[in-house]
Image (cartoon, rainbow, N blue to C red; front, side, top):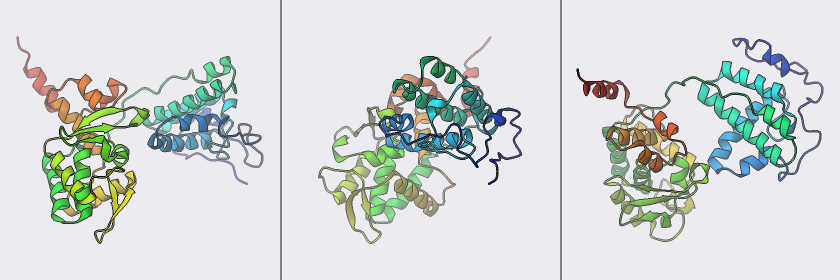
Length: 331
């Protein structure tokens, strides 16, 4: 059997030597025997967050487990309770050299949360836990991801959906209205009929990121798009967005967030738009609110961010805003 190799393009100094082990023998950090999921710190942590966050953090934990165990373990076969300061410090060093700060910190957060669960499960003593989680966050700015959608691009998307004269197009135009209200794709997929106020255009987001609830509102014109879909779907309880077949059949089963994202990409191609993601609607929503002078605390509430700094990172108004601000000054 070979040895675990990290890409040679990265100079990881001595930190990697703490992690590289022969794969011919069980790794020292591997579980000796399986733990029941109710006692497994990674499983306990992931069970306490939303399904979309659980998928993301699960992938991050798998990556960290492979690095920590020289490729031998995943998140369920690593014995997280054995981690000590030297392991988390080495992991941080690797993340510092291989990941943007935001991505590296997300992985560190996942590990720290698992260690917190291990402490609460009495699998780690207090001193070992405090030392292991004492590693600092990775500092620095990451390049901004995604892009802002222009009003005419969103209008073009809605237009091609409506002009298709299909159930799929009617549904997706309605979903776009929800995206324009700042909802994440997982939140759009999770909407129920009962979550909508057809008088005010209010949308109650149940268990958004972090399992937090919030009230959102459709932008002008959004309620009409939603009503068009309901005329086809019917006004019965259950998932708001059903699956639709290409021949027009509406199947009363909840559409997945992945399916919604793929449909948006397909409509974007039909409309001749540059590449974009479902999350770009959310970036656009937040940035446009800030551009209209809405105070950041209100934007934070509408976006469902627990930290106002997260809201600020979505600000894509750029240099024009800074220039305009300076022009207000004078001698």
